[in-house]
Image (cartoon, rainbow, N blue to C red; front, side, top):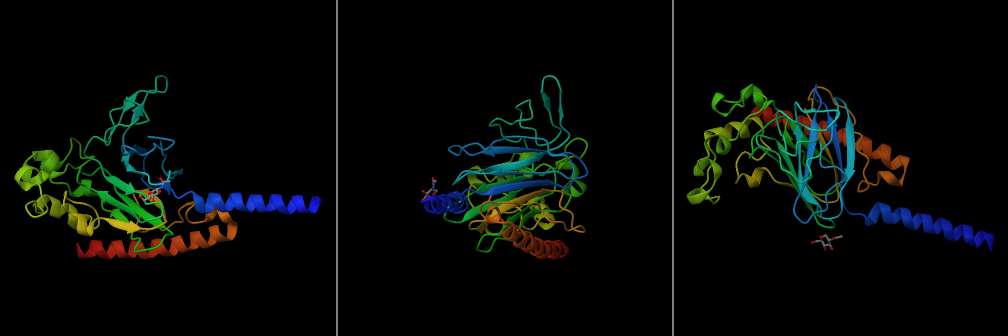
Length: 292
Ligand SMILES: *[C@@H]1O[C@H](CO)[C@@H](O)[C@H](O)[C@H]1NC(C)=O
């Protein structure tokens, strides 16, 4: 009888673990800050998606933090820089990527351009869609790397410091961010609006081409879809601010989708695969840059 109870509880625990590992089909997002400064990530869930446990937080230099999304979550991530929040009132603003919430949490507020954006649609059971967009301008280097998953699962983003290459007419004040041509000039041909509101009529501009040359996998203007949207099924994702090309390190990506919760061996295997994958991706990005 006792033996039976033990077996049955063991079975229950196994079933619960299996449910946790396989049943939740949201993705785990891990943010890493490799910048030489603090970044305050902002998170905006799309209408109809449950907000994540934070909508904005402080990520110190060298820090990392993970979030689990609900199934079918969609939304965007970006990095705010140069923030100051009053320690007493919690109120404050950021130099770039500010979300006008006047506090560390963005509370459903969007990034004020210019800001490098990572956009995701988590397809629970079907493929995820993701991209890094410079359509609203650029403020800091950011890459997205899938971890595990099946399909093409390429990393994307912008490893270049575009602030260094930003033309004077797009530059923000002291050069901490670079506007899109749409933001800077507001004309329909740059914004792909009005008569230019279709992929046939809105073409790359000298400005979007400059962005594309520097960051070949990022969206450089509104209809840049074919080379800028990526898909992967069942992956977790690492989002790195200021990825370094010379220093390859192991991301602390512990995700439910990749099965890390199922045991230490899986974790080690997963980290090793991520390491090799990341090395290959970084070489790919370097080659892209050399070509650009
Ligand atoms: C997620 O979306 C898929 C495809 O649209 C759907 O089949 C599934 O039921 C959704 N899952 C949840 C938990 O909403």
